[in-house]
Length: 189
Image (cartoon, rainbow, N blue to C red; front, side, top):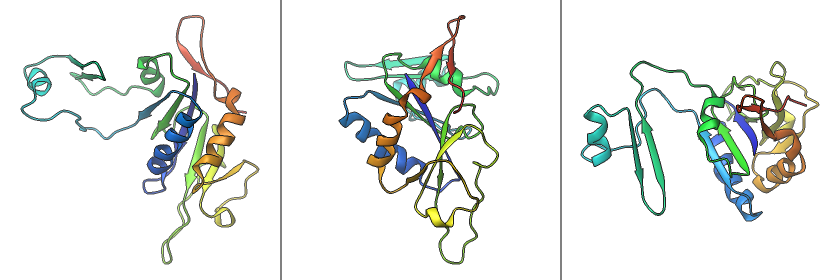
């Protein structure tokens, strides 16, 4: 499987870009999964539902499944900081691409998403000058980037072009199993 991260400040357009990249990859016959970093107390379950009641009763894990989907909800007794690699290991291995959003500190190859500031706003900083795992920049304003770069600059508003670039560069995003059966990312290039 191939894994690429999308990094950037809140409001930069990461979620929108990922949302647009998914159907572009699917149009090419590729199976796509997403790993998203969430805030501390997010919940996908609702009060009163059977699965919620089971969790409230103290279940460590609840799996709900139908002929169309499966959901696993796992409760941690103590706060746990899972790495993106732990989460990738939880995914179905028959996927072609995994899009990772929100793990900006990870050691995965990432596309930095940067949006030009609105009039009167101060431009946000960028990570690519210091982060060797950033392999491209997706932006709506290449001429306004706060730091020069030799990295590929992709059009934030053209998801098909972003996908073209990803598919052309697919080998650099290959995620491998190591000798211990663990998944390991490729080194940045």
